[in-house]
Length: 301
Image (cartoon, rainbow, N blue to C red; front, side):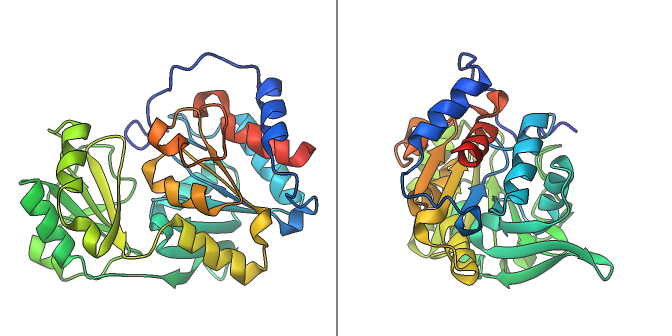
């Protein structure tokens, strides 16, 4: 299934044979990364990391399953809400595991049982009213959405076709403002990404919130102090994973916090220089299976 606006366009980087990418990734792994994979947590971003426009490649699926079977804790770490993680697991041919969703605001465990397949263990919500006022002031006419974990999104206007992975229920802005949420989204499809980012960064949005501008004129807003890193830290502490056993890989600005948090943070080849600057290493782009190369390197060291 195509996801043209969830998944960034190809990087255009030259092709590198997969075995070469694995070898480079293996040499870049920290010497103190535990050999016992039960003490290793690998956090994987989704769009632009695991998924291409046509889904997960066979190499990604195989490496993912081999890493899980070897005993590692493999976590889907994404800006997507819980309901939008379900198709990701479908692409991976998996129905069990962990996910840190909504940029760290929601921690979920997937395991089919009792008529449901997911248990939301932690959910951090915030009052979006101040953030909505800030975005409307900085970007007049901006499309807004607040995530409701079990329903999808309440949206101020319909988003462009294909841009929401979950259902969008058109509602008055006053209803959005009155709905505590793990994530607020804003989108200005008529605006250049750089101009949009400049306007958002010039606002007071970051005073009481966490936010990240995407690869289009799109912004995710979350509770203050909540990022993919904090969500992963909560899970690692719960599972007893040592810091030296933490690895993360991603390509977007919302991945910067977890790249910095992990003992070994890896940027995808398609990541911007801003994202790469916070990583310990760079793997191949998504169209060359860079995430699979990293997973395979962890297995083969």
